[in-house]
Image (cartoon, rainbow, N blue to C red):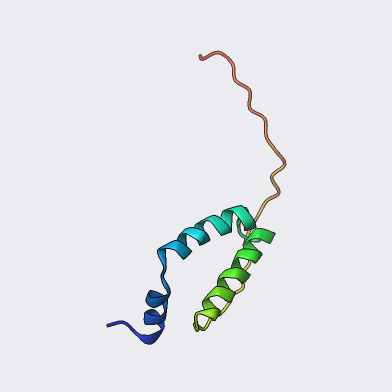
Length: 80
């Protein structure tokens, strides 16, 4: 049996909107690694979208480890 909140979600599913979302998040927001600006923007967008569908949203804050990638170098030689 589907509860009221699940019914709202199922009724709101539109394949074309899903495709637009699939393009919006990576193209407009960009990388969404934990703790990044892109992550924060995605959280805000998804929360606002679910709220617009009449759903109650909650944000749970937690600590996460992250890093600052500055590049890398790999050199190879002949096989041993």
